[in-house]
Image (cartoon, rainbow, N blue to C red):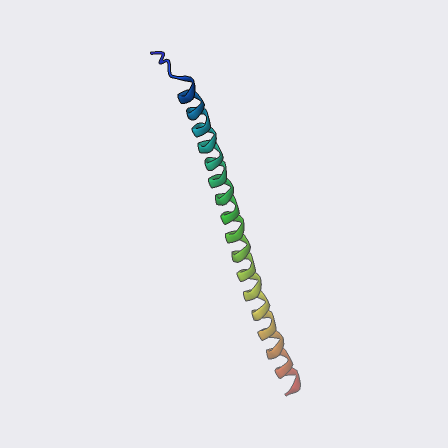
Length: 67
């Protein structure tokens, strides 16, 4: 079924489609950024835990050497 619309409506629909496409691209970009941020936070947390464990082990080793 082919519909014929006025020139103004065709222009408006094209503008709307363009807006929707950029909105979708923005959502996709935001989702990717959120995923990268979450991965960075998780890695930072793992590294912090490893550093704290290593520091605790080094402190324990230093205590053992002194006695």
